Image 1 (cartoon, rainbow, N blue to C red):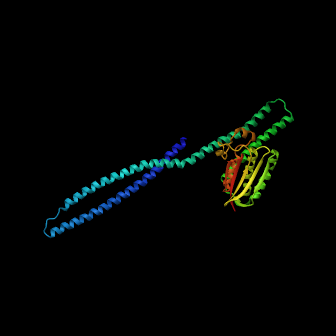
Image 2: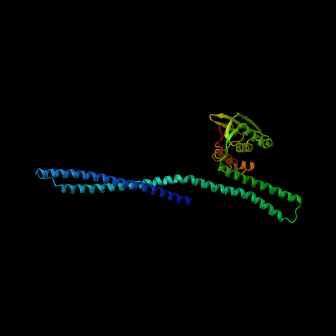
Image 3: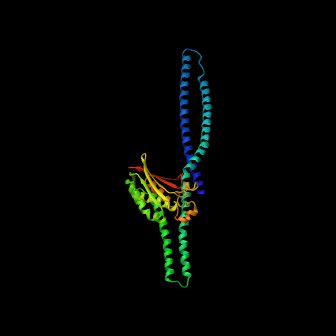
Length: 340
């Protein structure tokens, strides 16, 4: 993008200016110190020569011409300064060339995360706008068609209102999820000791009606433990994972919730027996509004925000969530929590 190319160039010049200023400061300091040392050495040598010349005069002997020695020494000092200035200039030229390349590299590394975050934000805004537009367009179209009718009865009006309420509910769900994403992204949850079994029981109880409707059996194998976290948000997170497992698991299948200690952490797993996650989709499933396998997504509904929200909740609880496929089929989502 043009904006980031310009920013990269400006940041490169800024880094280069700092490096050049530092290099010139060192050069001047070195030049001054070297010239001072050379001057001291020259004066000392001149004093020795002068003393020798005076000793010769005291003994009535012909001494060496100190003026000629001083002139030769001045010529040597001038040549030395010329060579020193040339060498220092070459050092600064090399510093500018190498520093320019390093400055550009550092500028690129500095701006890369910002650029990626900006691109992700643009994609998110575009996708969110699209998702919001769909129910709004449906609402508008249904109402326009209804108003074009010359006659309508109470049943038709009731059907329209029911449909409108469904679309409003979808909009409410989407806006609530987007708000939760924002809140958890900047949340500082008050964490404390939480019983894992209480969290699992609460989440399973909430998911039970959907599981019963789909004929799915939920199995719990959870070792008792106390972890550090926020109870309500962990229930919400586990509910998201169970909802995902119920959507994509096999009909009349089994969803398992397993939990056990592993070193200083507690590992909580939600496992389904569905088709699993494709290799192309696996790296992206926690991205906002990402929905792999569009055919399945259209059947199950949703906006591709659940797992993104789950990841934000996990981060707010200082925990880690990952996903993988089981060797015998199905997907496994794993949450690692800190033992209290």
